[in-house]
Length: 610
Image (tube, rainbow, N blue to C red; front, side, top):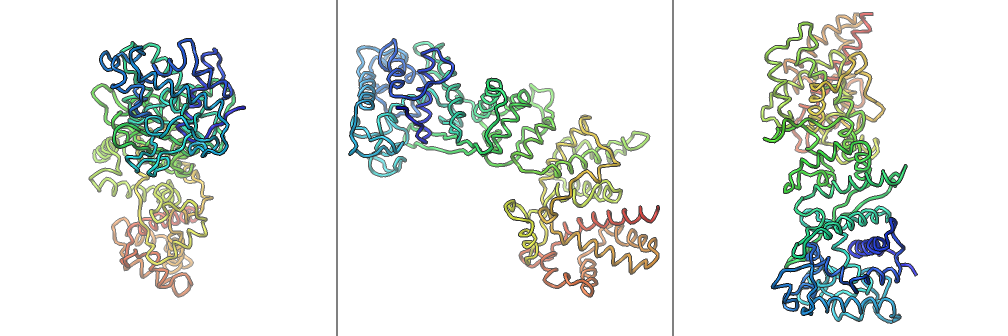
């Protein structure tokens, strides 16, 4: 007979720890199958039944997060323990620890001998019959157990105690040795792939056992991760993955594996439990980071402030937000300077965790060196930039323009983006991938056709986003450090345009710009394209730069197209240029039209000049 994992994270962590202990006692590197004989073997060793386990639990601070008011540590029945604080000594005159071990002995006997098919089924594993040994299972033997005195607990969160089998109750006593401290709570790492769960628990057991072996009899032993916030959990994931990569050649994470981190505390009057779900893309990121960037990401984790868990890597992964550790920051007194992360690690996070496309990253890698080259003066023969440009560059390198209180910084950058578009170095498609409209946030599951329908709804005036400045700022530092370069001759074609533009901005903007361009070229030039292009440059592109393209001017163009184009009706204007309150909102629309018109002008001018 072989026991299987139950699906309960607390019980399974305990069972895997028990397996690791029995295998260690035999001197084996691989774990043994979980059988009744293995349970008996783990509980019995040279010190006597359960004594090693009792000493370990007494000394580990994690035991108090698992079992509250346990007989093992009850001061009223462990007077010697109370007086001497000798946690690692089982004094013969104390009765508490003896009662604790006697209960475990009876549970083991029941597990081996009992055959009562009429008894209630265990509410933890759903496989075996509930125990008859304990009259009431409380928090002294099972974490978060329902209580007769307080019906607000879990398992089963009612006014009666839960029904739990002998094996689950024994497993819980091994849980403290296989658990990790995470955010001030004890954590169980439950993978959907049992092999990974087993490896993680086994390594944690060895770490905690080594700590116990080096502890003195009066020492309270901190479990792995104590007083370190979320950093150790991320570091543990990285370290364990690295060990697996070294131990198992060519092993790759399954494509569908995910992880739940159950962080709980059973102590005090307010037991609680949090579940952190780490999805497969996040695990794949950590796996690749451990595989290719182990040293770098380990150094990043060391810089995390333990008591600021909101800034930690695992918190960012769980929330699906950007991780501040990848960006440059002001150095502390002990640091020489904090440079940005490598492009490879950063881009791995951006694509795996934030789901940014390679085309989006490419747009950032184009814009940043363009700005740096212009502001630093490297595009000029004299290599000397104007003082205003030098000052702006210093300000940009010091502070992310996204967070700058000086709005003029962003205005100046947008002016330069427009100039890059006129020169053919940056396109509307690249811009909207870097700054996708807020209107299409959280629409990843929709098809391009469904998103196009959203843009046709009344009040869909485009709302600008500013997250693209993060990418720009990161790559700007790499441009300044000499780790990012580009070729001006190829950058305008380097962004993939196969993705539907509707997933980033209202596609009507591009069509509106093209129709306006064609209309003005025909009206102002006729057969003389040069005259038409001169008019567009002087009265449209330059007018954009001077801020002279008003709402009235846009509406004039819109009405002018209505006579010959069926898609320029009142309702189309309401969808393109008005917000939910019916107010005209054309700021971002005007800028994106400027980029597209600039590119159209450049392309037509190049054809004419040939």
